[in-house]
Image (tube, helix red, strand yellow):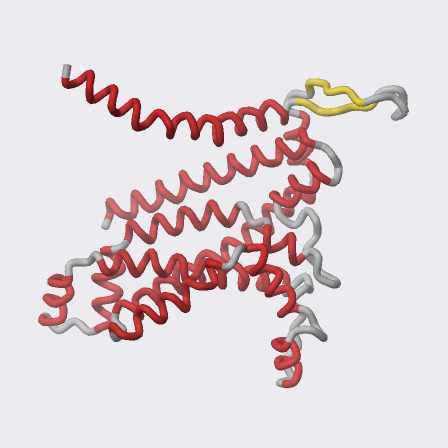
Amino acid sequence: MKRARTTRAAAILLGPFFVLFTVAMLLPIGYAVWLSLFTEKQSGLGFGGTETVFSGLDNYTAALGDRAFREGFGVLLGYCLFYIPLLLVGALALALLLDSALARARRFFQLALFLPHAVPGIIAALIWVYLYTPQLSPVVSAMESGGIGFDFFSPEGALPSIVNIALWEWLGYNMVIFYAALQAIDRSVLEAATVDGAGAWRIALSIKVPLIRSSVVMVALFTVIGSLQLFTEPLILNKGTGSAVSSTWTPNMYAYTAAFERNDYGLAAAASILLALTAALLSFVVTRFTGRKGKKA
């Protein structure tokens, strides 16, 4: 009787979650998979109407065979190699500094560093596009007056420009996660290390960082997944004057362009599924690699 009540209570509590998960996650994914297996073709030499026909894996082969789609993954690779280490190291360094700072200054810097994350991504991108635009930006004017010339919209400057926007948005957010994990460390462990003669650097690198390893892994995993979904920042930067960011610069932008500019929803769905599979594979690799490293440690 008691077991039946426990099962009933669990079903009542978990029921809304599974309903929402099915409606908001499983059904859209299933619809995207179904949509990716069909394509629209015109009859009558282009003068007739369109009809939806089953195409199997043709949309997947078309996406993989498209050079723009493949180059989008190359852009993501460069973005991840550039952005993820800077984010993790920067957020961790800031959290360690706050953890060792005076109590009065902690809340001020926490708020100051977290505030950029409160700005919506599209607004943040618009702000930085203004700051990147020559003849408008005080930043560009100051750089030019100092003899520093840099085109933020050029092929060489587009990726660093987007990485800078993403860092501005997410550095403070992840710093708060690391700082909360550091605050949960037993202070007696740190006091014992101090008594043993360990310096601040030794305590930070040999005690604090290993103890918050699970938080670092979680942030790294979410950052990898978020990086693969890069869309808002390059989409806004694409509107900049003379920008090297094309409408298919990332896989997400490729799918968006295929769906809403070319009306090829099957191709867009196939590109989205391929991107989702890549994210799942990378998530598995990150968790597996960090899990093995944790066991060795």
